[in-house]
Length: 95
Image (cartoon, rainbow, N blue to C red; front, top):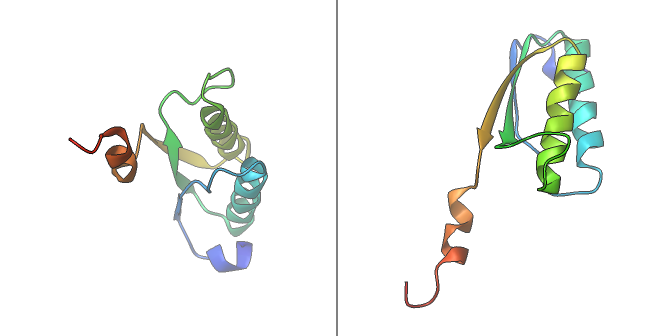
């Protein structure tokens, strides 16, 4: 990862899929960015990201944000709520 990111100033880190090991995967990407000298990570986080969040994945996003800060890399968190692709699942057959 570090080799692939050489010369990169800003990395867009798109959160991984819902996986029990997601934070570990994010940490590996962050460590590669740190080793490559990346100055800023823009991360697709989640609204309400906090260590005690009710939504489990919001806790994952909080941990990832913390890992970026711990690595000494500037962080921009884009805390969206839901993606538009799931909106149709909330609408019944009659609209």
